[in-house]
Image (cartoon, rainbow, N blue to C red; front, side, top):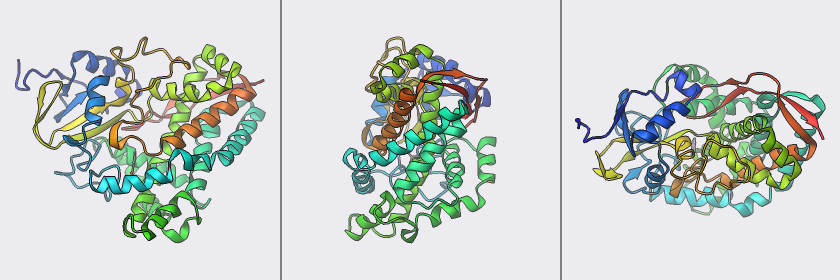
Length: 399
Ligand code: OVV
């Protein structure tokens, strides 16, 4: 027994560069130590890497709130690095209102409307990649696609879109500690935040796009006009870096599992489940936090009010208690219940768009490319929250 009511205490720093480079040994150790653990470098945090507890925390928004931040920082004690997101870092009743608007704009039915345009871009981009043969999977494919189709759908102009990459990197780094990664991301920020906020204004957004539809919801009185730009900011924060890395990680999975790629090529209708399994196997958003709103328990273990609760999404997605042979990338697994897109009232509101992008890129690839070969060692872009590649050299063998 110890001071922490018997909670195992481990000496891992999830944000240390070697752990970010290869988080899987830490995931294993945290998962096997117990349903919840403490981490020595972060005494005010309790963490879980098991599916059951991560799922339970995400589905209890009364005890485990988001309004005090969904990163390491506790907004009850520290000032948020930017005005709080009105959906991500909000609780009911505010969250209920804003979520209803974004949820309608990004609904499966609404997303059907952009499918034709998104499919044409995927086909054109894959054609260009096949023509090259040797590509960098990140710069030539995973980055270009979301950076084209998503801002187009939101209705953002063509100029300066690279700012979205810098901003996304910053937002997701800001959910970790004030380490060197955050300092480096913040140093690049200067004009980027201004560019982002300028592009949230109504007169910059194409009429009818996702962004403009937020202002239409304000016209209809569902939200206020003051809230509208911050909700557009959520699109620009969460809509690009996430899908880029989802697609990049899926390419990494397929390139390293030629047998699975062969199955995808033989049956391109497996594109969607192959993307889904990549989300489980190499989860883009590795972690999210909640904050205990009161003294409560997780798995019967007391958790003190105002504790930050670290949910290791990526580890839950490989918990052997939930998944048979969890480290295996299997495109026909159909991993329903994975938490790569969260779960509960805060579950990814853009998931229909994210899945569409993944499906269309992998589908276009499956139809035109017979095999993907790893053409060199990939390099990682370390981020406090995202599992991200910087480069992924690939050779595409045309069908
Ligand atoms: C899911 C997510 C990630 C980052 C930012 C936001 C949301 C936001 O609402 O700004």
